[in-house]
Length: 317
Ligand SMILES: Cc1ncc(COP(=O)(O)O)c(C=O)c1O
Image (cartoon, rainbow, N blue to C red):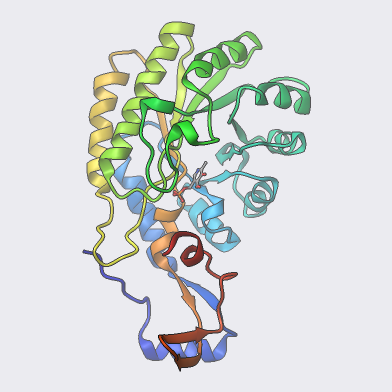
């Protein structure tokens, strides 16, 4: 069970809604900062742990700055998100560029900014080279496990998903980049969205750790960082429980000791690109009721609309 509480009393909230034009989003700064600290603390065993906050989850410069102070980076999927992260003072090595179907100019912008580039497809090797006239020193590839993994409800079956390199393409792509002179390598995946079962995240770590070992065996490449993507869910309904992140951290640590250490891959940096679980529980859409109407059903008409919150229409939230 999870209970939703408001960050301020009813009277204070009403006063605020009279001072500010509604609708507006209200964010609980202290709760976001405490949550970010707790997230870092949970994974403090992991070498070089960092969360690259998924800018798409809450593209708000004030919040990006707050999170940057807590050591977070930014995960960007487009040029506007790169610009927003830069303008929010997030330093280059703390920006991850995880995009899909990327135009040349966006690769160039990411490279010029100094972001880590995470390629979604084998054909993007050529696009990237064309865009920047060489290969970067560091590259990451997004892996799609295909039939080796079942997806979850939102992200769907990996075989049907447009994201990431297939199992057959992945080792070959590292080999190509090695021959072209890339020096540092990362490995990424994202196979779940709004997942509440922590064991799914632990199994994703196992999949990536095993793959890092396979890449080393087949190419000699030492993967220097594993990017677990985002996908940690939050309870939207009272009958749902938050993910047990302590269990996830413990499970990942056990797998790190079992798979990564004996393979000679330690220290291996572990990073996430979590967005929703960092800010989602601490944002509130404040809207005024315009009319309550009684027809065949009862309706509450607000001054907010789908433009302010798309989730109910998209996901039945
Ligand atoms: C590549 C990538 N990383 C991170 C995220 C953030 O996911 P979440 O907000 O579920 O943590 C997304 C969300 O779609 C994504 O596509």
